[in-house]
Image (cartoon, rainbow, N blue to C red; front, top):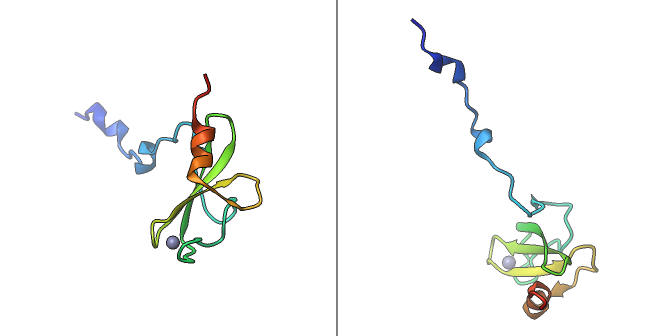
Length: 94
Ligand SMILES: [Zn+2]
């Protein structure tokens, strides 16, 4: 007597990975932002594209080596954005 459970074998680990809502995803290499960390010069960076509340696309960069975090305008000239700038563009307008 074979049970019905056998037919559902082979569940893959990748099935459990769900896409992240509004984030465009983590990219490496081709994303905007600096080639290296502005604080320590490390090149192992995590880049995440995020769209702020006012629809400005930015890239959040986090350094693996020193945990320095920075914001850069997506498609901009690579200038690091200040936290104040990000806060302003993230604020909800009344
Ligand atoms: Zn660093």
